Image (tube, rainbow, N blue to C red; front, side, top):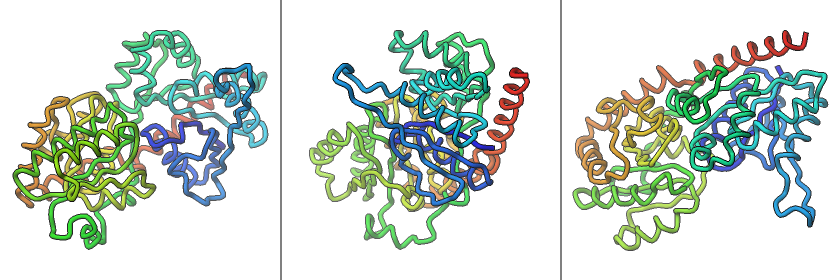
Length: 379
């Protein structure tokens, strides 16, 4: 199979999942062509089965904003014709599914099927901005296949858009061989020289991630016991988080690492992962931490209850309840046996439900069904 994948190349869940999917497919011998305005942030492979095609957008004085969706559609058709793509797989509905729909029309009479994977804010954002609803609904309904990363997101899409065609739930996944406990525990000394427990957070630091709540939780815990906080990522709320760290005089205990490519090496050193988001359609960062034997404290929203089992491999709190999060954090970290037990259970659950070796075959089978259906429609 020859597959074209389009995603946002930035530091976010949809781009990470799309990139990891492409890497896994390439490792299985498929030809994968990434089509975007920049290489995805985790695309660091030299595999002969992976190619990147840059979408170049011309700037004309007539346009206030570059017409990326149109340029993307043209590039999709070019790659489909030159590489002989069997299908397009677009991640995030806006504007990628619209571009894929246009590319399919341009490729006629040849049938170029496309699959749209919904990731969350492409659906929940439209709920707040109704001007996008008609075109998003149309492009989803015109897709040859639609997948959602969680049962929550599938339900939300059906409610928000009144979609008639079926939506397949194929959850996010993690490479369980890559994401595991670090074999180099001595590397913890760079952050915790005296053996303090390490709390960690990983995100794109958007307001929905509540990075300042992470700092608040850590401040409450720090009043009771020594600990270190490692923040991985970058984004608009980093400045607010840094200011709060200074206000609470926590500068010596908090480490801002910025964007990191090999996040599994960092997660595998943590003792507790914090994800107090206002909303998560799945919670990929939580899953990655769990695969590294790290218990998770997250919010009881969206798709997170499908990932974290309360009281077993972590705890679920209500959004913005920093006191409850701090209470659970102290419970986990004040007893090393409790933290290790929950961490080991977290990895068992991650392996049981979300390993790449189990999820990728579901995508392969779905691709085959979509291609066969499109072929039958053309015939």
